[in-house]
Length: 231
View 1 (tube, one colour):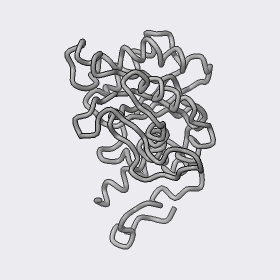
View 2 (cartoon, rainbow, N blue to C red):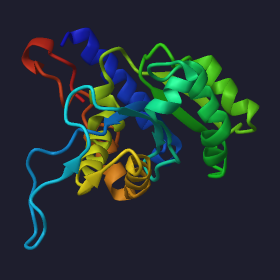
View 3 (cartoon, rainbow, N blue to C red):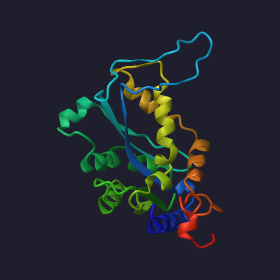
């Protein structure tokens, strides 16, 4: 990782720290394959030492999810099944699908917080257009959202709580279910997302270096070479 990228990440961290964590939102897309399960787990006495899935290869059906969180709560997600994507004639998530999610679900959920101002952060996916997303919130009556940031390229794993642990935690919770099928996977995904507790969210905000008194260069991979200024 270059020194310039480290500096860009530190600059963004400083900017994020200016916002209360309840008002700093992160949005991203992820997925679960129905045939994906944990290879190792702990089994309580009397429970079956395996999980059952319908498909086991890399081509197992993929269920896409758009999700958003703050440092205090998760917001209702939207999940697209393979059949729904086929009906839309798309292979993944498109910008219009994201904007529709904001219009139908997210803007109302965010607006109900009655917190001002709100800030939204995203990675640099080609479906993340800051002007269109901000306009979608405002068109739906959510004027509380005032700023939309795009994080530096290749920085989401270090800056976004979603990529820095929350999605991983959620996927592990989904995979622990003893039987995952096409008929229950959407409900399992949604239930496990909505069950993520506030303390877990704040822990991932901390792991991403977004809490006060955290050195913005704490995860620099080469501090001796980069020689960043003192915190």
